[in-house]
Image 1 (cartoon, rainbow, N blue to C red):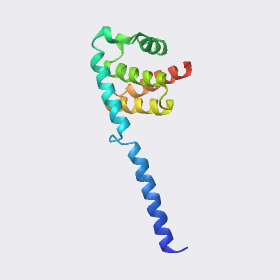
Image 2 (image 1 turned 45 degrees about the vertical axis):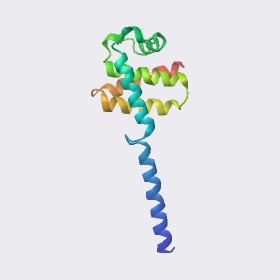
Image 3 (image 1 turned 90 degrees about the vertical axis):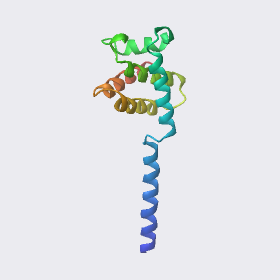
Image 4 (image 1 turned 180 degrees about the vertical axis):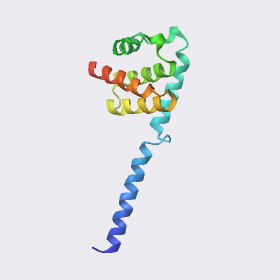
Length: 127
């Protein structure tokens, strides 16, 4: 094999890995839209009249040991966003759950990502 071919091959591999890295960065437009939606949902979580009862019932059913008032507001906002997206079925469920876990890691406490992943996994099984 020629060294020119090897250089082109390495270049192609580097370009593909750079493309894959773009999807998982905070600059990803889908990720940024989800952050904005989560922030709006978080802000509205302090107004008890704005809550969607159907979404909250799904969350409460998936986490019976955790009544909604005891779930941290940020975790609840992330769960509401993800459950809404799961119900809308515009994106693959794995993508939605992965994004929700990433948001929980970024904005929640140390256990938020595990909690969000477990609740969403339970809800996904029931859909």
